Image 1 (cartoon, rainbow, N blue to C red):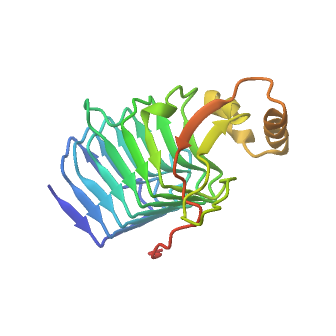
Image 2 (cartoon, rainbow, N blue to C red):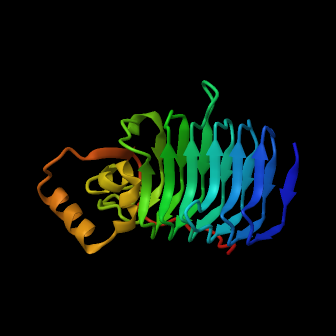
Amino acid sequence: RNTFRNNLGKRSRYSIHFMFANENIVEGNRFYDNAVGVYFMYTEGGAARNNVISHATGAAGMGIGFKESSGTIVEGNEIVYCAIGIGSDLSPFQPDSTVEIRHNRFAFNGIGILFNSEVGGNRMVDNIFEGNLTQVAYGGRSGSAAKNFWEGNFWDDYLGFDRNKDGIGDQKHELMAYADQIWMEMPVARFFRSSPVMELLDFLERLAPFSAPDQILVDEKPRFAKPVQGGMS
């Protein structure tokens, strides 16, 4: 039940690392150039709100991380230029609990959200995904698209229209992994991600799939227009 507010964290391994520490609030902070911005490990409850987390780079670079944590709210943050925006491992951990990820902006990250050891129970609502190299990924074949809830998010790679002008895409946004399956299942292949060869493989897979693509997520009500969000960065 601690509150961390209006702090500046720079060039650290972790700006804040919680372990067996429940109901902590992290809000209005700026975390730059760290390996990890905020990490929740073996925690319950708490929230990360209205923070700017940027340039968490390197092999373990991560804006916000979860390890066997439950009941946390991630809201109103700008997570930009990180290797991984949010990394989740076995979270939420407690049965019938959730992790709420809403009204955040994930921009120009290597991966917007990465789920490892996916158990479901995450709710992603009204977030912005733009300029990420990969929007969402699973550590291996997902088989988990239906376990998490996605609704009302803005995707800069959405291919639908909004003919009735209600701000919601006329068709659902379905994210599929084609050649991306290679580096998701074989981490050593990540070095070649976005290389010309991988881009060609991905194009050919989409044109005439020679293997079944992996469904990553389905957003039934994607936003067509990017929401206006007050920039903190």
